[in-house]
Image 1 (cartoon, helix red, strand yellow):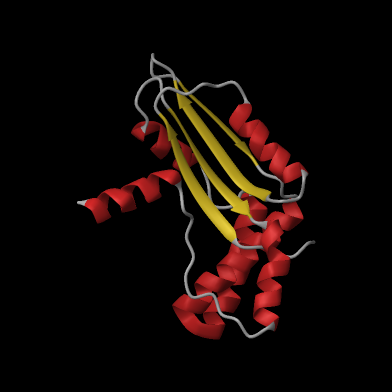
Image 2: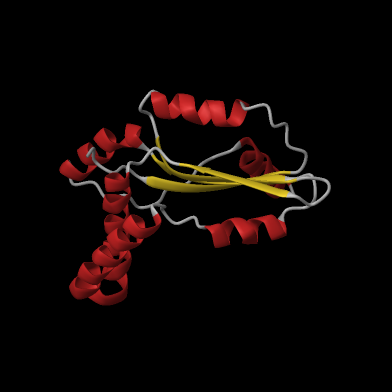
Length: 167
């Protein structure tokens, strides 16, 4: 299995979704090129009549899902209970992934999301592994660097920052 890169979770709402496949197509293109790996994707659409359709996808094999589950479980366990917590968390994460073959997004999540979506709307929850960042992250670590902060800049964030500065 390839190395695990930085993980990101995205929650996206669509008030009037244009379900033309372009969003999923862009994700699949990025995945096919090796830039990202789709760890888990949950899409939920609620029709004007209130009917709900949900779809999930992942690039992970069952074995990879177990590795990701163990990795995340170990880190959560480390924070909760030190070395023993990491061991217990790794086992629990791997077992959960093996039994449910999912990474963090469940049927209950889909039902909760559907309850939050207005009729005619949609939402996506996506966990992405940034494969492109692995060599950069490793080079930073090998050079003694430590990540102090990270975030994404969006046009909306920059517009808001400008409005605050002007205001």
